[in-house]
Length: 240
Ligand SMILES: Nc1ncnc2c1ncn2[C@@H]1O[C@H](COP(=O)(O)OP(=O)(O)OP(=O)(O)O)[C@@H](O)[C@H]1O
Ligand SMILES: O=C(O)c1ccc[n+]([C@@H]2O[C@H](COP(=O)([O-])O)[C@@H](O)[C@H]2O)c1
Image (cartoon, rainbow, N blue to C red; front, side, top):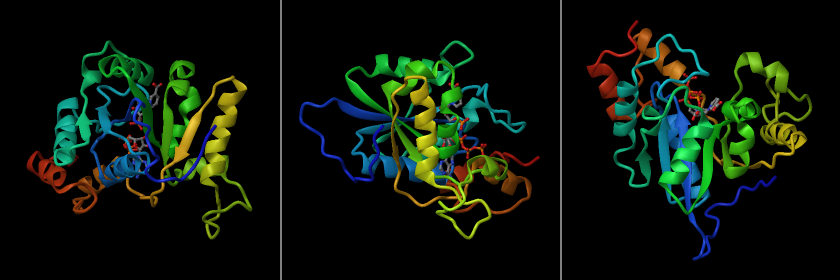
């Protein structure tokens, strides 16, 4: 296990190209996603980030899941101005159901001679020991974890009295202790996990929140990139 908060880790001239995957449902993409990608890019001197929208997420049920086309189009517009952000629609062409390990192996053959990181939020990281064939995936990537407040129903599970980074809250918890628990769980299965915390503020923003604001006819300006807000408005998305 490794952890540090260094910025721009030096790259030797002989090292492989450092790429990262940021997978998600992106229903819709929001500024939390963009901040985690930008932080990872800078903190770990990544060459590019591949944004990989899930075609049909089997592990996530959202009654208001938009079509792949809508979610991908919003993502395309959100990252268009960033030269190091690349959209990959690879999951559209893979046999179903698509799991992260399949996506990773497909991308690895598409981009040979690269070193790989996977960017994800703390909630997704905590579920890593339950991912399909995680034994094959975990050791092949470096895991870059964006801090995120746990959902109310998860607080009891991970609360650590006396460790509080948010001590005024009823269930304080430590980000790094939570990550270490995941590493420990995987170590028990003899799986080596390399993880780092992203050095960014926690943004209490989620796609569910954006969808709720749209349903409630509240403004989503500054919560999503402007082209995404305009696209949602133009197509009257998430209204019901
Ligand atoms: N505000 C955030 N802070 C840190 N990580 C985030 C944040 N929002 C999303 N992520 C992470 O980005 C990845 C893709 O997330 P996803 O597209 O499912 O968005 P979401 O906001 O979690 O969606 P939903 O609210 O519908 O569950 C996941 O690893 C998730 O943990
Ligand atoms: O492969 C799995 O079993 C698996 C289970 C849960 C999540 N994932 C991956 O986690 C990423 C974020 O997923 P989500 O549900 O937060 O949108 C996405 O790239 C998924 O492929 C993968």
